Amino acid sequence: MPVHKDPSGRRSVQAEVEVPGTPEEVWQAIVTGPGISSWFVPTQVEEREGGTVTANFGPGMDSASTITLWDPPRRFVAESQDLGPNAPSIATEWIVEARSGGRCVVRVVHSLFASADDWDGQLEGFEGGWPAFFRILRLYLAHFRGQPCTAFQTMGVAPEPTAQAWDALTGPLALTAAPEGQRVSTPTGAPPLAGLVERRGPPEYPELLLRLDQPAAGIAHLFALPMGGQVYLPLRVFLYGDQAPAAAVRAEPLWQAWMAERFPLVAEGAQTG
Image 1 (cartoon, rainbow, N blue to C red):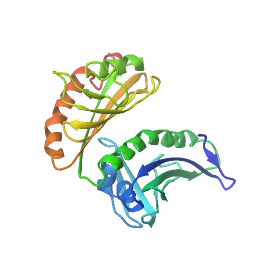
Image 2 (cartoon, helix red, strand yellow; image 1 turned 90 degrees about the vertical axis):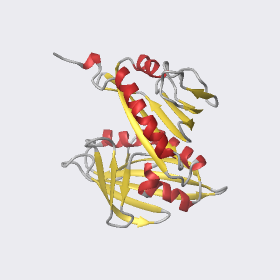
Image 3 (tube, rainbow, N blue to C red; image 1 turned 30 degrees about the horizontal axis):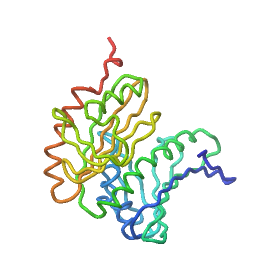
Image 4 (cartoon, rainbow, N blue to C red; image 1 turned 180 degrees about the horizontal axis):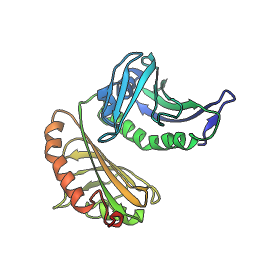
């Protein structure tokens, strides 16, 4: 959707998802540190007006914001300078609306005030990133709600084209062709990963969402992101329950080594000199 522009100068984008759970359960998932870290990125939250929200997107990639409105279990707002020191501050508003049948709508709105279109591209980028994370949130609330989570992530880089990079990742893992609803399992020689295919993205946006039973009960999310002439290949794994910490300790180094061997972060096509 395009950026919505008010006469006041407010520019905003929004995304929403319907999820299972009561408002109180959904609130725990979207505004507490353990809850957010169970489906998004590692996050710490001071749960009060004036508190800080710190989300870690990778080494040296922390996003910090300050809570300006705190109204559990319905609404909270946090402001940040994520667009840069010379950019307007951006407000992120989360809204939880109860629906019948034990479900809720979660809506996130990003807004800022500006007199020019300079920041519209960044706003649209915020909007475009939420659908994939919302799919993970919905799966988490449906099957693992409230359970302790241990998560890890690894990433590789491959040369373009995207389709070729995606095949190079999913082929050796026996994940290339399995349709939604089918159980899959990585073959001998690959790190252990097994479960049900919950979603397979279209060819133009390669993505796999798996509900795992190996290496423990959980969720795995794989996708391909072309950027700067290369294709980034992240793998996010969220494991739940009492067995998750030990399973993550075993699985994470295997995945890190497997990805580093096949998709080093400095891809051959990007090397210079």
